[in-house]
Length: 396
Image (cartoon, rainbow, N blue to C red; front, side, top):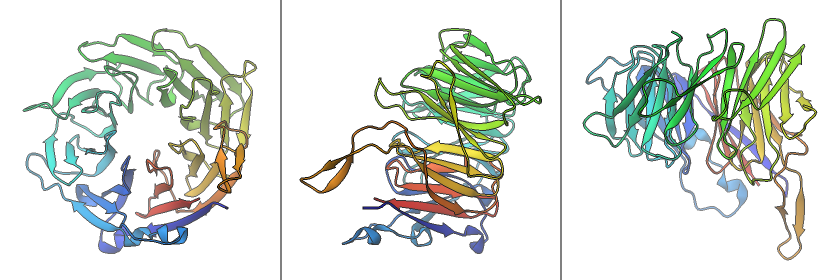
């Protein structure tokens, strides 16, 4: 049976609302969208008794809608800069341009509101092991660690970047350690911080301004990528227990890479793949198990790729460029036929093809990290600068 891709859209600005970011609930068909005025709109897919696969599709415009309105109680509310659900989907953390952070429960209760940052919050990341803990990184050069269950004050610790740069992203690498970096550092410094320690326990020097940083939890590896003005592309892979990279791939005459993603972990025997979205519209695939540093280049975009993202089930690779052109590729093509049930079942989840299976225009997009997969891997949300939200649903 062929796979169907069905796209629908929502235009919140028709109701006087503008949308910027979105985040899918990890377990339920619930999409959280950041809209103007600091509000959060939760779109809930209605449960419909259906007889056929086509009836499973409900256009996003028909999803139920709940608005979480952060009426200011302590601090003025500004625009939303980032948002993320926790691992279980019980809480949604929202960061604002003015440094305010608000934590909401799944049912729409405001759990707390704090303004411990003094400037834009660039990143919020939940700890995948200590499920009540998350970190936030800000323009004010600080990374804060929070405990959602700690009362009366949820703030656990403040880390200040000693090199004086704003923190663009924080990435958890264990239950008590995270990595942080700034895109403004010319030498590309990555700090490894640990809860309970006031100063970084380790520092990696990438060697050039870092464009993206990504952690692979199965293999405990950190990837950093940079592109210099002389078209030198540098990808490095680090172990958190070593100061020097364990893998260094340096390419000449390569376009700038602004986003990367690891092929999601599966089995210990899986090959290590990293994909990167480039300024010239290409997507690079690195196989880190290849000693000869071989890489594959995928084409299809004509302008800079702003986001690349694998689906949680490892089956799809989505890429989005500045014009809002979306491409979904198939990563798995090995199947065995089940003659008893007359269906095809995958036997290996190893990238072999990367062929395009879906393309769509969603409108101009100048932001990074605007793709959000549902936990079930059958829905992909996309936002754009025209304040539209697009939903791609996959029927197998």
